[in-house]
Image 1: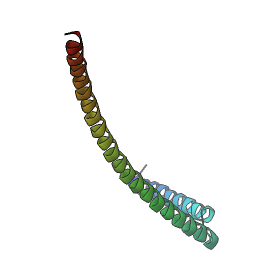
Image 2: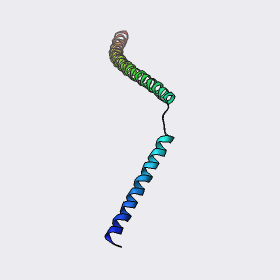
Image 3: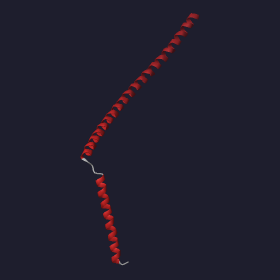
Length: 108
């Protein structure tokens, strides 16, 4: 095979590859054409998605603020419980001391 024949064969192969690629692209574009009704539907779906994301963000912000509020209430309740338990312990010790004092004076 001579140089001229090789160039001719390579040229034919490249032209056929280009033609096949162009034809496949044309067929693909024909099959996947977007109509104006589809564009309107896509716009509507995009709007709904945006609204849903905003609602989700608002819900997340509300849940975070509510969680912080409940955490604060819980820590306050725990502090009150601790103070009440400490007061109860003091009261029990005082009542035991009074009982011991009364028992000592009654028996004595």
